[in-house]
Amino acid sequence: MQSETAERVDSATWRRQALAILSAWGMSDAHAAVTADVLVAADLMGIDSHGLTLLPLYDQQLGNGGATATPNIEVVHDMGAVALIDGDAGFGQVPGMMAVDMAAERAGRFGISAISIRNSNHYGAAGVYVRRLAEQGLVGISTSSVWRAGIVPTGGLAPKLGTNPIAFAAPSARGQPFLLDMATSTAAIGKLKLAQRAETELPEGWALTRDGLPQRDPNLALLDPLLAPLGGHKGYGLATMVEVLSSVLSGAALTPLRGAPGQKHDVGHFILALDPAMIRGSRAAFEADLDRMVDGLRATDPIDPAHPVMVAGDPEYAREADRLAHGIPLSAKLAAQLREIAERAGAAFLFERESAPT
Figure 1 (tube, helix red, strand yellow):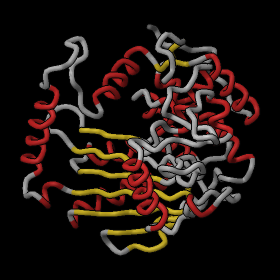
Figure 2 (cartoon, one colour):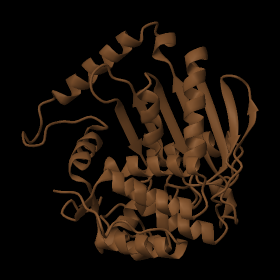
Figure 3 (cartoon, helix red, strand yellow):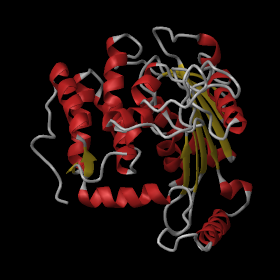
């Protein structure tokens, strides 16, 4: 996460900066808007590893041919409640949100809908997609494969799986949806990049050396990623499950088999939407029970009264409220990277002229 003492930029300017760079890369107005919205949503929730800090990676992928800014996204086949989208090597935000919209409409008709995506790229924070579904009264699940292997199978010394995120959201009658968004590694690659930017050591248990010892240097961990699965063999199993849902089901490239990624990364995503009204018979009853459940969890006696018990999503919503009011923290290093990208693309650099009051 960016330092909260850094310069802050209001979210409108943050979005305009993203749009300026994405448009300069050749994205259509519609695609740039969707992509910017997903990135800014992550930054607002404090998921800084999946916000504008991704633009240097995207710039690199455009430069080496791993991604295109002008994809021809197509629905390969449509069977009603299920469908398959081909992202044509574009970034994943546009086909991801396309899948969310399709799944929401079809879950309203069938009670359930599953949309798979192949031939895509990084799609940002998985939680953004399921939150959109939950805000429409639906239960949402999203998974994604990752173009680069990073997770080491339990007992192994070679990366075979990506950090393969999974997100889940459920609607609430009052307040924000329950929102879980997690990598299946102990830490996502983006967290390593944030540690590199902050010039801090990695916590023990995040990454390994080739000798199986804890890797504390983020620079070395990024050069040769050997990431520990979340919870040992359980996280390894979850990461494999995500690979099945995201890659095997869609026909995307299989991270465990591809070795070094090809020119096109062929990342896969999966979106599932469930309508509680059609399954249980009453959306209101579902949401009321969800509220009672999370209220009971929050009411648990805390170890430290200064740190009350929370549920998934609470920290992100608190950061979002703060950043909407006071702006998104901007580190000097990220500002320098975005300035360089903007200048190279011929886009305006906006952050040096505007900042938010603290």
